[in-house]
Image 1: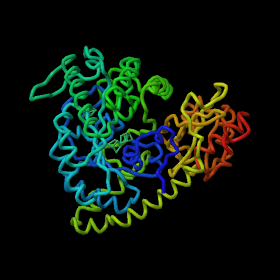
Image 2: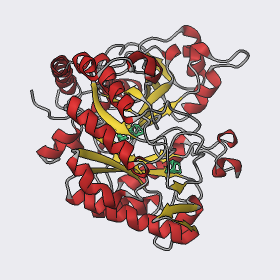
Image 3: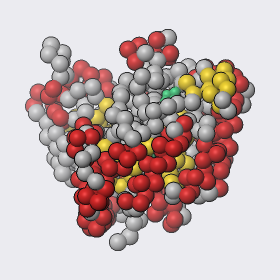
Image 4: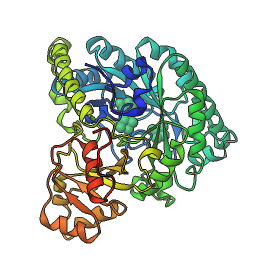
Length: 472
Ligand code: CLF
Ligand code: SF4
């Protein structure tokens, strides 16, 4: 079975890199419909302070603010990974992303990776860090075969001016540094660490938190620098900032970044770098497909009494390999169905006209979720020649489960104000009418069809774009 991807960017990659990312749900957008990740919260301490983080909660560099994860020892974490791997055969990655910084807790982080590498050799190992301690652990990471590392970098301003507005202090070499000096040291360490990783063949993803008014205009420069040093992927994460999260920015009234601000910055950064656009800002104990969180199903009580031999049997390496071979078969046919519809932004349209289309999905690359039960929409941009994935937009609650007294359609209309069409597996008459009044068409005739080719067909149908499918 070929692992040729439907994503044009992936098809131009060297084979070894394509193999590395093929079933990593964060590094490959195609993979995220099919493969799951698990985070284990073994790393509580942190060595810097970010103004968008409240350390009562998980690390906001890789998580939604205001959530707290169940902390585990390395042994408990390894047990959990084996138990979940037996239950969720599409699990392909173990990530350590907090609740503090993975490399501010090196013993716990590496002990966990060592145990998992021995018992579950098919899992990819991944970690997320602020980068302060990265240079000194690159060789250790090579030893454990950790070949996916995320570094959060919000500024490349060497004067420290921008960084000092984001980081009030860092703790480095047993000393606390403040202001511009802190920002300069952090940046030096991040760049040095990322360069070392690139030299060792570790794929680096960089996260940048988009903070309007502070680094929004600066992020294209960050992208340029990342490309220059060989970073693989850049992920622009909109700041989520509310006073109740108790962060310095939240308390100072800095607002969350909007979907439209994120799209603008993504377009400016996308000129220079390959972007990740499907990030969901997971919890430090997230389990499942990106966008779903099955963490609550796997509490300590489920696995802690089992010993490692029992857990290895439960993990069932061979059963997992067979299940993943089936996923690959399905993915192959899905890619064939979607063939050639995905394009880069500048190639979407022959006359510059494009529309935004929202899709409801429960995974597997299909339009397979009812409108009433969605907590997020996938947003695609479509022209007459092709489509591209833009990002996802989250809802606080489902249409069918809105709070008493509130019209559940209001937040949906606000989220979709620039969208012209929704493709969904099923929708009732009332919401369909409300959407129509707001100028948004809803179509359920593509139910259980592949997403990408359906977006193109529907956009052509609704907006009188071209008649013929290219290549058909
Ligand atoms: Fe976890 Fe991060 Fe590894 Fe993925 S998450 S450590 S690279 S396995 Fe993924 Fe979650 Fe976004 Fe992170 S969607 S927050 S990018
Ligand atoms: Fe919080 Fe993560 Fe920043 Fe540490 S690195 S302060 S845990 S957001």
